[in-house]
Structures are given as C-alpha cells and as structure tokens.
Length: 300
Image: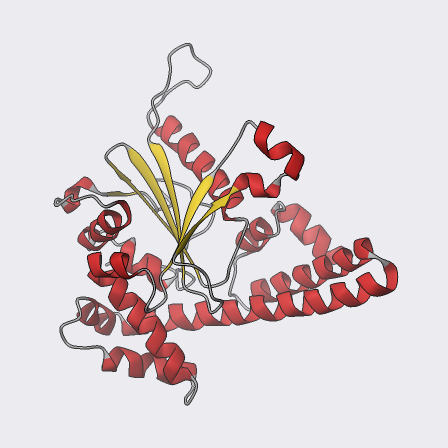
C-alpha cells in the first residue's frame, strides 16, 4: 500500500484502500441494502490526482453511476450538509474537466448521483441514524421555498449501535470494536499504549487484525492525531461556550458570539501550528479562504 499522510483518519485508511475495495463494497452494501459481489465495481475517487476533496479524511467512490461521499466524524458537526455540498461541487467540476465536457454547452451533462453519509462515533449520545439537512441552516420561514436542499445520512457506528449495519459489514463492526476498546483502555494507560493493547487484544478471526498489525505504525499515528484533534476541538468548543455566555450576559449576544469566534480561530491556529490540521483544512472548517483565515488570526 502506498504511504498516506498521517493526518488521514483510520476509517479512511481502512475503507478508502485500493487494496481492500472488498471492504468498501461491504460497507456500501450494508448502508444501501444492496448485494454487489464484485469489488472491481468500486472506483476509489479520493486520490488527489483523481478528485480534489479539500480534506483528506473522506472516502469517495463511484459505483453504479453514483458518487458516494463517506466521512467519519468523532465530533458532532451539524454543518456536514454544507461541507459535502462543497465537496460534491469540487468532484463534479473535476469529473467534467477530466471528461472534457462543456457545462456551458447545449448538451445535458449526465452526472453520477450523490450519496452522502457521515459515520459518527463521537462520545455524545446520538440516535442510530438521522438526517442532516442543509435547510436547517436557513431561517425557518425560508426553508420551504429554498431552491437547494442537501440531505446527509448520519449513522451512529459506536459499538452496540446500528446493529443491522454492523451485522452486515464485518470490517465496520471490527473498526467499532477497536475504537471502543481503545477508549476503555485509555482510562488506565497512555493513549499510545491503549492503541497497541487494543490491536493485540483483537480476536484472531477479525478480518482487520492482520492489516492493522502490518500497518501498526501508521495506525497509531493516525489514531493519536485524530484523538488529539478531537480533544482540542472539544476544548475550544467548551472555552468558546463559556466565553460566549459570559460576554453574552455582560454585553449582549453579538459580543458573546464574537468572543466565541475568536476562541475558535485561536484554537484552529494552534491545530495548524501543532501539525494536526493543514492551513487549508483549518480555513475550510472556519468557512474562510486561506487568506481570510490568516488575516483573521492576525486580527485576533
């Protein structure tokens, strides 16, 4: 397997692998209730030289004239419809360019239909499945008349949740087992040791075990980075809430929101400094261009 950046998430490392398209196909079948059997039907589309995704922790693939965008999230993000709308636009732009189609011409361009899924394994209690909608971002009185809607399936993949999905996809069930075991072991040992211990403790009949053992260094670095990012994100959220509430009580809601935004910018700037996020990723998550992000950090 080609080396990948350690910023990638383990979920992507497992289900976005060219060598293991059978695992991707198993996940697709479980999510959609389908029964495809040929992994060659899967075309992985997350490689930067094929499709620009904006971030590197997504899994995108083509099958049966569908473009499937899968993302794993360890922190709840209600803005996923907006993000995946932007990703989909990037993919369509690239596909049109590669196929030499003319979007300004008179001939209708056929596009693969988008299927958008977020796999959630954060620590907050969420239902097995719910739909996130772009229209939730609109003012209530405008939602019914808006000309754009985006629906994203958010599926809870924590151990013990989404039983049917886990039953139908062995690699996903084993991934959920690993994440849960790391969390349990982390209570009594350092995170890096908890990861090693969890990999060693995996049952020998788990499909993922040989893969994780063979790529233990990469797996550990990805999980360490992911956990550090999740912790930092939660810290800045809590800090932003506290400062926002304090400022809101003292000076009104507008000032409170401004302070919370400043805390967010500082936190993302720290993530960039620590190498956990690229500057592009941080700017995107703040809804800014790189130049706007850099200037906003300076202004703070």
